[in-house]
Length: 435
Figure 1 (cartoon, rainbow, N blue to C red):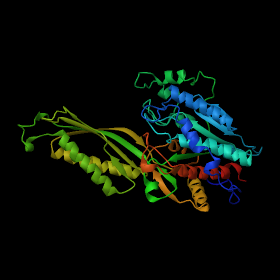
Figure 2: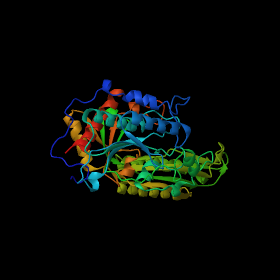
Figure 3: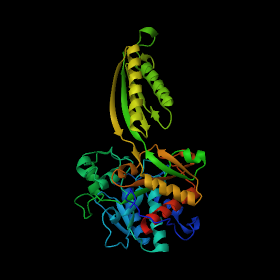
Figure 4: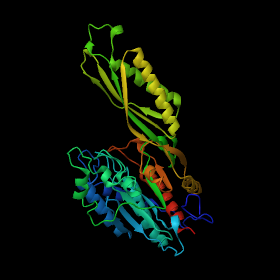
């Protein structure tokens, strides 16, 4: 068995038939079909965890899985599995007995696009259908999962689907959370027909490996002209609120040199953020996306300013060093301008490298089939970062037009969708049908 525990190979195991083409696979048509659930007036898709559109979509997918020859099953969290059962061997035990799983999520942001998450689910369903049609039952069980939630768009909590499967989070941890209408998580899951009082099995489950096919949600592949992104790492993140305190005073009668202008101090700090991030170099990114001032009046020197700070990198030490450099700059600016400085950390996520053996397998497939690929980190968070500590995990990206995502204009050309689909089929064949 390989170090990853995914696959034992005596050589290359690629399907002995041509890859599927656009005419053979209803990939775009199924994405269009799924996007009708939660279609909104703005031309986008809104499916929030446990709302009516989400429920209708998950149950429609269960019916579609059955139609495609898979065995559908829900768990108590609302995750949906479509299983292509392996013939198995009585002697198979341990990691090799666990299923190989592909999939993603179907929940969306408000007024989102039709590809984010949904592409990985639809491609997984159709990949298992394709493999079963051409090769019959696999030696090792293959599954596609439509995760119940990833975005955190309804409740202030993300990755509920993958966290519940891996056991990182249980319902008791989140049942008190409320959406903007005051509905608790506990009530929402119960109203949707899931939860511990439902007839479904608990969510916790072990996987042999997890593969997530996803649109890039950025411009790298498109700009560099590559068909496939092989994700090396998913970045870690730190998020803060920075509060700068000064003194409100009259804009006309207070000399510039006497002011304690919180907004001016915050502006200088934000400029420092950009300089420090540029000096650190890629792939580090730092973003200030929000700033507020108090009292927020045009003819009053600001007494208080609060701005957000988001720092991301594939190495934790780089995130920590960047934050310390920024904090030192903020403190210096505050002291020079006689301002108060406070900060609060809201999020700290450790960077997660993807499985090395699976990365190599994806690259080999691309090379054998003459597909241009690019090793790259993911600057966005994904369910794969939750699964990787629990089982070998890999992510495959396809290009996003103009890098647009979380937007009705989100789009990936059908040819690019098919490139990712073909790589997924090859990888699932290798792990599910190889000797």
